[in-house]
Image (cartoon, rainbow, N blue to C red; front, side, top):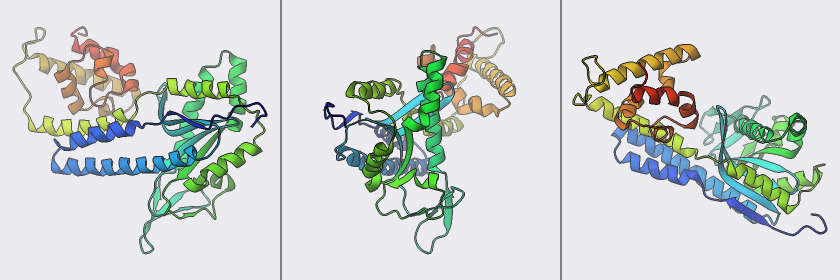
Length: 344
């Protein structure tokens, strides 16, 4: 720390987790789900709670570090069709750390190819798991694109991109103290990105000491942390919609389609029947344009909810299960036009 730099310690600008509200929504949803879906939802609740416990362990390590840092917990960033749910963004005087927290149970082995393999119990078979390093690299890409976009001109953007890897570091933290990590055969660059929670602070201190970058003042640190905080969007709500959609599909399958709605147009059928036809036509045409499955646009349960809720603007459309910000921006105008009867 510089001679005249004021000590600020560890400051959490965002300490709460959107996962807490996400768990609450799932708990409420489980009450109305059938037995099979309830089990899936309850399993997801347990996983989310387990993940939160791991994140609390990381928070404790940061709070007791004695280092100057601004911390953002559970930040969701979006740019274009890219999005990232980041467990921690830690802005220190020297570097910015992007932390992916994994509260994994069992023993973890990383082989020479960078594959993550888990074994639960000495007699259990090994299973591959999705690489948290790959996951965090995608988070880094989103964060990089958002920050680069804010730069005023081509030269500033080029300089930022050139120095990005020197200033931003990706870390995967294994929060479960019982987890044994075997990275004996992993490549050096992989080993450097995976640490246990009790090694986190010493890792940050050592990496900062080795960094060749200049030290930031408190104002610069705060401005950088606030830059990402201001771009945070609600993330877990879209995850909950996956399960809301599942329950909605159950209800749609068990309830007959209503026929007592006002007539729409001059087709002789109900408004609902014509909306179903027009929405299906739009879905099919769009899926052919993008060369994707039609249900990726929206499935039948989502279509029924569109008709039932009849959103009149994009904000209301975001409240329909399965319609996040990206999808609403992409298809919202066309869908709203159909619902309002303007597209013939």
